Image (cartoon, rainbow, N blue to C red; front, side, top):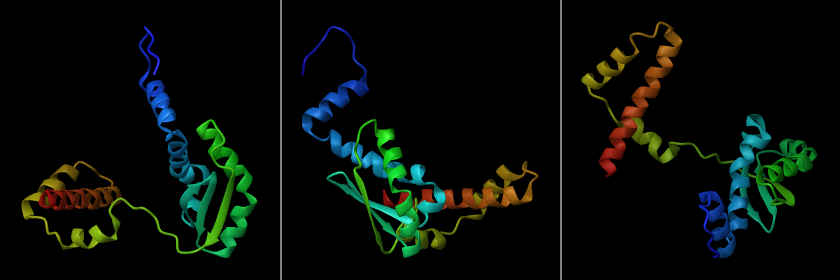
Length: 162
């Protein structure tokens, strides 16, 4: 790699290294997969799952033939938006097939049962309650309580794993 006297931005250096290693294209493809939800929107994303990109072809699983037909009408627009976000033509075509749509959630079903089994001590529950006392909106307080309780349980699970 050619060195100059001026400091270079990290992203420029990484771009050159990735290009040299031949993984730049694959990184762009992975970014396109990651951008799927933002490009198509929440409504379509609920009924689709981006599987992979191979040779510029994006493979998507759709939960019904009705959604497959709908998305087919927007294919060109989706391809254009994905490529625009990458600054290059990364996606050439989209292939859709009907199948089971699985979504990546932060907790996952494997950990979900563990969360329900964990019991917090009275002191921990009281601590959460005290934090939320200042919030007057009851529905908001209830939601925040669930979030804080779940967070506390997840921290307990993580501490046991380590």
